[in-house]
Length: 417
Image (tube, rainbow, N blue to C red; front, top):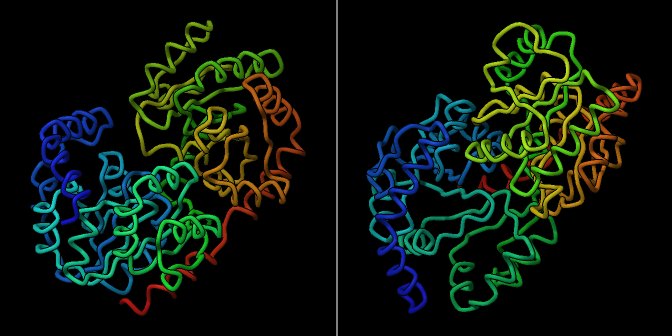
């Protein structure tokens, strides 16, 4: 064990009890139920020996790789692991037939137990889950590790570059990196990934198809609580966007008073903060239960405090704003609302979804705003212009799906299978 990894492992061992408590509490807040401490220490249930093991940290990463998971499950046993409770909830919704476990803490013993029990033929890790002890144990076992849908932000690259020795060790443990874009791959190579072990496959989020259950739920809401209403969804909104959202709703009400707003925080535990911010601005909010009854009142604002419903809400809406873009957080998946045929609005911070934003912009399916006031004006303008709303929605649906990243990814990992 290298000196740097030894220090890291010592810190992880000391922090493990507190981490287990924190994960258990967060899982309950997210509606995921009790955390499984046995899985966190590597004792996982096994359905099939020698599966393809696919790991996605949270609900967002899982949603991106779900088409890949489904494609692989059609040809080989698959074991899915997630780190967060929200990821486990989403996995049960999207891929209910597959075994899913909570991934271990990054401790050598935990990964030894985990890998001994499932004996994977191949490890596919989503995006940037570079756990030192996991990669060290995989290398010791000669287990091929492929980073799929890989991305590397400039900020993460700068942070890892401060520890060149430890980072090169991580890069050498990767068999292949399938990057979302050329800039991502360049950063992996800069950090020490051998040139022959990287290629650009594209962003798997571009291959996403809205599940039938979400489409049907959207139709039920549209025929019930949202019948006859113009609806916009502020999806995946993040900390720092509370004030802008309140400003947007206030501006919208001046133009389209009857429009219904549905607010979906990226993290359900932030719902209380959004409710407080809106009510301080004089905007009362309704809970999700308002969607279960008769049509909501014109101008209602509904706050969602759980995961797993955003895709259904996009399917029931007319316009979508994607959060994490008015605060400097890089943005979230803009293709999900596009695939439901919605015009997509974003703020200026879209570093994490640059390629998808460019595609929607080129298709005429995207509006970019720089403030809460501009957001409210843009939503109002779209809801008031049925022709433009329909044209942008159709453009969004056409631009939203791209099968190439999935095809490239499957071709690249075929030799390892």
